[in-house]
Image 1 (cartoon, rainbow, N blue to C red):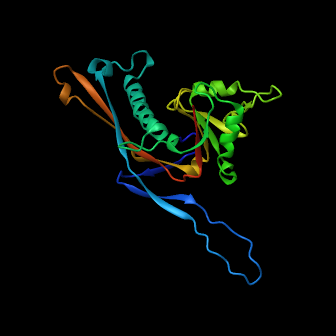
Image 2 (cartoon, one colour):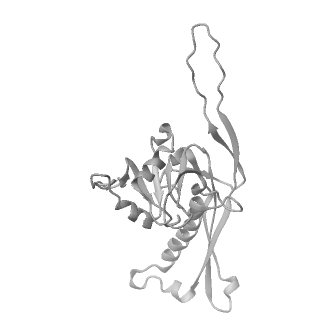
Image 3 (cartoon, rainbow, N blue to C red):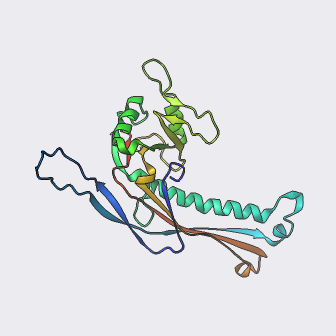
Length: 255
C-alpha cells in the first residue's frame, strides 16, 4: 500500500480516528445570463480508523547473545531487524487484504471495476477497462498493485501488433509501468484463481489511508525463561487502514 502511494498517518497513540470519506463531488452546469445557479454539493461520509495490535516473540539463548560478536555477525541486531520486519509484514497484509472486521480494511475491498471473463487469466483489454473504470481525475498519479505471479502473467500480454503492454523501468527508483502508470508487486494479494480480486488500480494517495500508532515497540526479558536461560524479545506494532475515497480505487475480479 505504501509503495503504491497510500497516505500514511503516524500518530503517537492508538485511539480511534474519524476519517472523512468522499463518495461524490460537486458538478458544474451551464447557466444563462441572470439564470439561477443550482446547488451541487459533494457527498461526505465518515469511517473509523481503528488500530489493531500485531506482535511476535523471539527467544534467544543467553550464550548466543553473549557470543554475538563472533564472525562479525551481530545476533541481537539480526533478531531486532527480523522481528520488526515480521510485525511490519503482518500489518502490511492487513493494509492489502484485511476484511475490516476486527482487522484493518484492506484496499482490495474497494469497488469492483471489471469482471474478468476467465478464472485463470487476465487480458490486456480487461486491464484497459479497469483503468477506465477509474474516472480521469483519479488516473493522475494512479498506480497498479498485484501479486507477483499475477504481475508475471501481465508482463507477457501483448497488443494487436505483438508489442508488450508492459514498460520496464530503465532507471533506478523508477518502477515498471503498465499502460502509463507504475506497477507494484504485493505478495499479500491473491494470485489468479476463481473469484479472486487480483488487480487493484487507482490513486492510492487519495483512496487509502494507512496508519501506524507509536512505532514499533521492542522489549526483552528473561524473567519467564529463568529455567532455560533464554532471553525473550517481544515486538509490537499498532496500526490500521481504511478506504478513504470510494471513487479512487477499483479492483478486477476473476470469474
